[in-house]
Length: 157
Image (tube, rainbow, N blue to C red):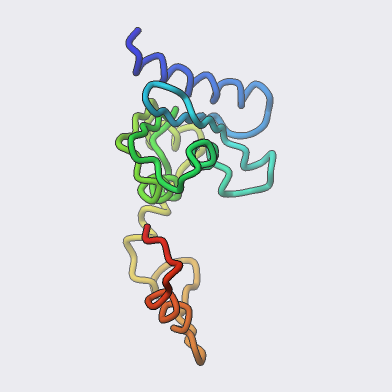
């Protein structure tokens, strides 16, 4: 077994253990830097009543705490399944070097985890989405952006 295969096996084992304990869905993820696992996560959506508690997000949070950084430059993510749209967004924000996944989104859909509608919704104009989204501008709406632009305390990310 190669090192990458061994790391993937670890992510898959986290997913299996999560199913066995009943903590959440069949998903596990790890973040690796220089061959060392620095973040682990499994799906805890139902256990924590948190729709953002996906395996990849959990692993990213732990890895960032470990590195004391909001970015995962120089890291790789191994996940038991192709990331959903939310996790893809988090992964892009974290900026790892690579993501490796075992199962596909189609395989996840076959067992009831279908996020295809989210991909489709994101491609729709805002006014045609099933979730009502409407711009609401009030006085000083742009003030936080203006303050950010001139702030000497901002950290660009």
